[in-house]
Length: 468
Image (cartoon, rainbow, N blue to C red; front, side, top):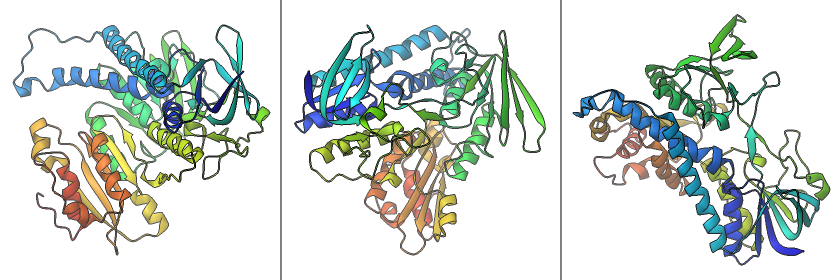
């Protein structure tokens, strides 16, 4: 039986990063993955493939809607080859997952393909896909088994017409009418892919606004922009029934007045969040406790109730984000090595990869009001930037919330071109506890989208934005 200092169960961003960091710190490390490719949900059926389709569909949308205005004339009809688009996406996934395999080899990490199940706190049985088994011993184990798409109790996901995000990434045709249940990140991103390609898109959301966990101003602006792009939104609607007859899917919901509304489409994307995944883990054999929500219970060190077993990522509490899992993977590896790492969960950014992109870090205005914190607001519109006008990406704004007394930045919320990249500046500033004035006095290259951050900081500092 092989013995290891650390065994990691699950090879998503949290798991593989944990394994690499453990190996870097001199620990003999194994990683266990049930699927044939490494990378977990994110690389195989999540972050990476969805971005590939968002980029491809964006190119098509620009060619159809904007090229002529740029002086680019393409004779004949511009057509979508969905099969080729999906194939390119798969090529991106394959290249990326092979890259993870390379990193495992480079760091001398043993990879086991199969389902990892505890037999006790220090032994793991690996049920391989050919029905054979192997056993390993691990001084420490990191559980990084991730999450799966959630559904609603009355919905039958048939993976053909009533689908999750996994199936939406490999459709054989562009839907005529895609009904999306859930107005969160995943539903909106995939909705925009197919909206650009010609689908009618209806979003049915239980809460009173889309992206309900983000600042209300972002939600309002994204709603406005996506409506211009053809989306239809039905907020404060409670879905109660989903049925399929042949190629037709019917979704029934009650609006906020209790009236029944019916939606008919050829596809229904169920996008109501994700649930922690522990199937086959046999956590009870190791004595590991789960919460009533199915998450692995951990303390502030991400340690379970069993001292040598840790858990990270989507399977524990907190935001289900790849970069949060990566930080936790590094945190546990360094903790095992006797170091004193830290994670500030308030500074884990959130991003929606629609166009315009939406990104945020820190407290929302709603949270500050609820907590009774006195704050000031600085906001700057993207349309006032020369760079935004040059690229015709004028939707959106940057909004900075700062403490009324100390001027410390408490939250930064942005929507516009490339905000997924711009948010890193906000995280850096807040990690060093910058004031709004600190940001306002940093030179920002001209012309860039990043100038909106400086201008919003100026607006938050005695309302002295220069270009508005």
